[in-house]
Image 1 (tube, rainbow, N blue to C red):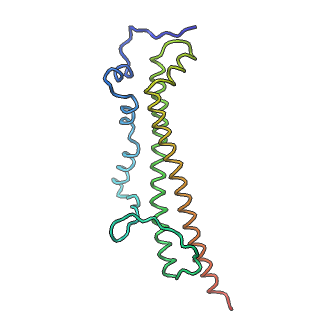
Image 2 (cartoon, rainbow, N blue to C red):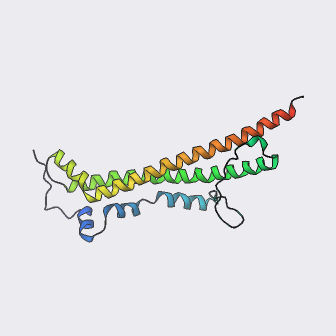
Image 3 (cartoon, rainbow, N blue to C red):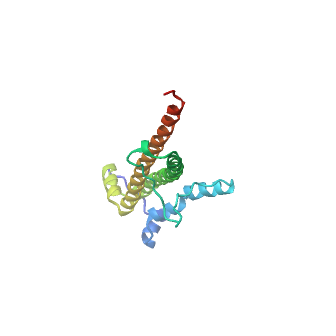
Length: 183
């Protein structure tokens, strides 16, 4: 059984985009600006996202744990705590932005597949195969998998930053507990 689309219908959005040379995925991305909208709402509410920690010359800092925290001075521990807190806050925002981009990319991928699928003729399986191999769908899939990779990578960085922050916090707590013990 073949499913045939009627050619007497007006030209679809996908067909118009094909003929104009514009990629459906690019046009659809422009339609979904969730991150931009969310940041504008935060700005309107006078809330700001954490900025990346920089050194005195304005170069980005990525704090590193010393090999042995037990020999760090109290001042150094305080500095590390401040740096790791700021770093974890910054990465947390980046991870949230990556999650938003992933959600949008997933929606776009599904939307592009649906629009392109409507353009295809043949059996259900033939339409599915033609949809999967369509350049518009491939572009949307690539966009989705790029967003997925970024989201996974930023989550990994966030977990590492939080783990380092916890390590410094535990050392501060350990020292505080030792100070209160009689010798």
